Image (cartoon, rainbow, N blue to C red; front, side, top):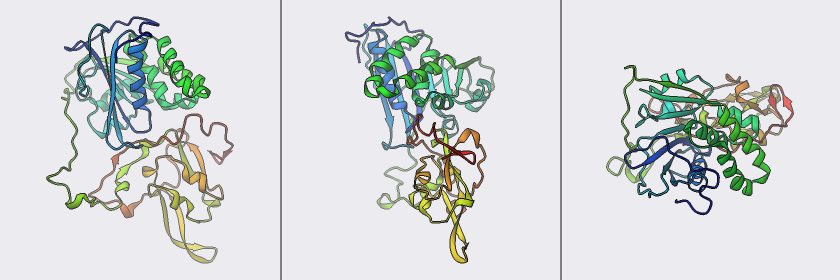
Length: 372
């Protein structure tokens, strides 16, 4: 993507760092549903049309669905040069983690050196995140993007877009505002003010700290991720031998600020929540209901709840209501799904579900600590 008539409209940016190919590179690590793909596209357009640079942006992911790992790559270089690389960014100058849970999933800092700035969506301090990342050196920037998205009624990727602009050191806020107004403002005019507010909050709410090499952690070399199954060792016919395979995934990173709360005194054990739930969350056991044998709802396995809130919509008695997760860090009625967990299938972090938007459920009536 090269600059056109709009290039230089607001500024002519100078890149603070470049690699041997003359490029400033970003890598966005995320999970489907959080908007990293769109954020990467916007950053590419920002560089080409508003910063007077040559730019390239593309994403990599497996199945195109919410919950899949997503990587987005952005390259900038001087306008008189062409970007000829189309390979993944191995040594980013700016590394963006859209969810803290990604840190425990796989080595997200692979290829990062002391010149890299890492942005993490978290409410923790940079010192704590540096320990989790086991980062040898570099700058760690923390921002509670999910909370800011809820406050502004925008989406998480808008907050992260503002944070990227601030952490880069060369992307002006006004250029990002103009980009959002020209693109998302045209497509979603009702969300323009909220999205602009999210960008500004992201720009002004970043907490950064730099760390020098101290011998505590080693640099992690970049390596391509490969599936443990291939043509030589996959099961016959490609069949999946894991029973209840969705239960092996920790879906808690999928939630975007909300979760269902269970009010057992209102439950009539109709099972509609269980039939609509895509992830085997609800736990029913034999018992007595109104003098007759019945399967009774004992609660939810929140490790497998991705916050889609379909159960809240389908519940006929209001026994399930929407609650803000930050207000319920240890929700009641958390019942593990022990029947489908085995020693051979430990929980693995999975991805996000984007069913809940930032503007949803903000004006609902509260019921017993939740939202009705």
